[in-house]
Image (tube, rainbow, N blue to C red; front, side):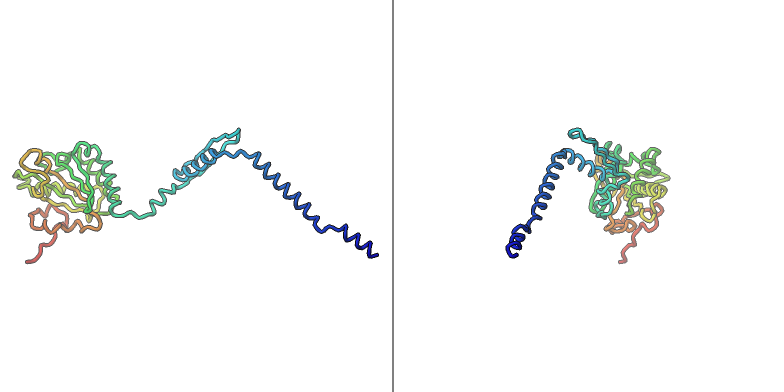
Length: 279
């Protein structure tokens, strides 16, 4: 009896599961080998697909990529109504004051490009703001303060760009040192102030709030060139439009050095004159 039990124990194999496990591993290995063999891995195809997806998110358009590696099927990527990621991030980031004024100067350059190229307009950006220097011949007839017909559209286009910001706008009229005296303008003070006031009026009519505007007449003061030559006098006869940075003083308050200069209050917007210091 004990011998028969010993024989049964010798025939019992406790590691039979290894056979099934080995078969499973073999089949699994064969499966991956077959999958790898039938796949047509093409690095160029996936690179094209990746670029197409990135471009779709940037432009927000539908992108179709056709790639037939080894006779494979076409690949189509469709991203409808996608907002460009770069633009969305950029629009959410607040711009600094100087960056905002830089964009404004670029827009003004586009609008005034013909006058800039002809030398009639010069646009610069400083810490104070964006300065637009316009020669008087681009706006007015000789000795006149009413803008010429062709200058109306230029001033309105300029006003449309200035309407995109909320900064104060200072308009200053300048003349040369040759005296003028007629029934309309007894001196260069009245002429320069009237020219600045005409530009301010057109800006207001074009939708710019009057609280943002100020007109200043400076006559022959602060020349940019010598008045001894005709070319120098032509450069001095100008209108200077300054879009003040928000960290500058309000445009409705004149700089202290201006308060001693005579001006014509009737040609200025309300609040343009700063109070004189009391002695």
